[in-house]
Length: 243
Figure 1 (cartoon, rainbow, N blue to C red):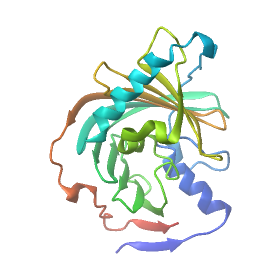
Figure 2: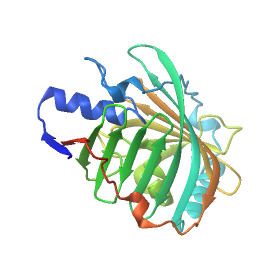
Figure 3: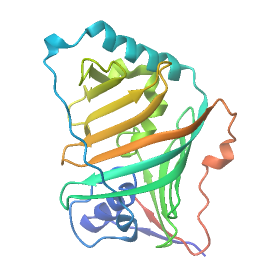
């Protein structure tokens, strides 16, 4: 039988962040949970270029290509290779998984280490097979859920939410996105795309100096994915933690 628990205070917040660190490390201290043990890291250095040297038209061409590619996209699947950098311990680790996305608002991110992140459009689940625990978390938007790959669900309207620039003038397919909204969880998002606007890599920089670097391989689009694969069903014996 599944057990349910609703926690509050520091311990709950730490556990929830540890689960979310599968994609973006936000844990600042304390005893690592099973989810935190699988978190990974990568160093990424931003390159700044004087704004006067950046051809604005080229940058906007890159943004427009991405927006047009994702605006009408219904679903996609991909294999991902992910690296996260945790500033506090200066470590780098790597892990792999599979991603499925369906609009509006559905996401399944399953790692080979037994971690699973699921969004059904209204709430997010963070499941650890090793610890037999699952966190159920409601949220108002995908950034609040701290799941960087969920950005793909809204990639059709980049200029609405981000200020866009080119970190390197000679690389028009590499874009830096800074959230316009004050207090946003991410400090910056760097996107790499191909000539048709398909995102091939993203690096998320948070305000604590951590990064999450995700590369996409074997991308397949418009597959007509079944909604059932985005509904989480906790295995027998799983402890459910509400947040």
